Amino acid sequence: MQNQTNVKKYGMAIIANDRVFDWLLPFLESYKATNAATPLYIIPYDDNMARTRKAAEVYGAEVVDLDNGQLDALARRLYPLNPGHRRRLRKLLALALPLDEVIYFDADIILLRDFSPLFGMIEAGKREFIVAAKCNDYVYNAKHAQYDYLRGAMLFNDGFFATSRDVLSLQNFFDVIEADEKVFHTVRQRGGLFAQPLTNFVVHRRGLKLATLPDCIAGASGESYYKAEGVTFTDDGPLDQFGKRIYFCHWPGIIGMPGRRAFDGLWHEFAHQAAARMKEFA
Image 1 (tube, helix red, strand yellow):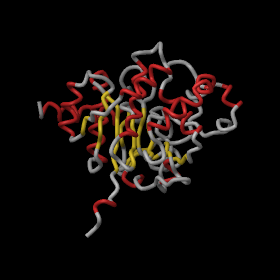
Image 2: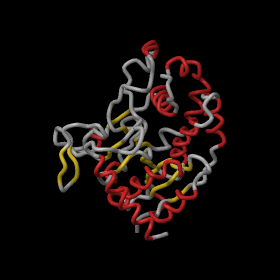
Image 3: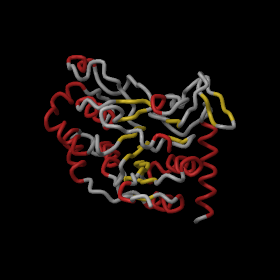
């Protein structure tokens, strides 16, 4: 019999509340269609959670109650003038879940394939933080080039990542800011950015080994942007312009609901299915 104490725990996490409910439902429906075998944890953005808790019940997700006091204090310290948006740092509570490895997603995402092959990929000193692909925008300003550990570092969008609390913990964020807060404020890009510059900075300051989805899963694409061009749709799921398998689609920074781009039809299909499912359980 297998020793249960050696069985690793894997899961997915998302941060949400009722304000993003129209985005949450398509995500949950896509999760059910592609990744239902993997436990899903919903991190509350705030206390506006009545409909979100109902949806979690319908889809078999767990709304977690984690101690956010120290993280919220860090958010107030870094962003004293942005009380509403600084809660975005609560996504980092994914690192406090009782999991050996976690995959985190923003709510403005739909899942297109099974992510279970990604579990077990985290390895200290080799693959410590997995992202979709390189992303040069919305992280640092030009001053980052003054620092050896930031110059030439691979920048990423933190709407998706996979890691282990054994290689990156919440305490690491507190420690890095305690030591290098002045540098962080010097190099971070301004303009409504909160968690993304911080996550990049801590990962880079700690020298974690970054990997991309294509590095970890053969045939995977690093493409996830809702404006992607050259996408083809097959019975097995969407492919990028090079014929690689696209694993998720992300609508970062979009104003309003998806419209008529390549993935928008899929988003609306999941939204309609989710609405029908919620009505059934009303």
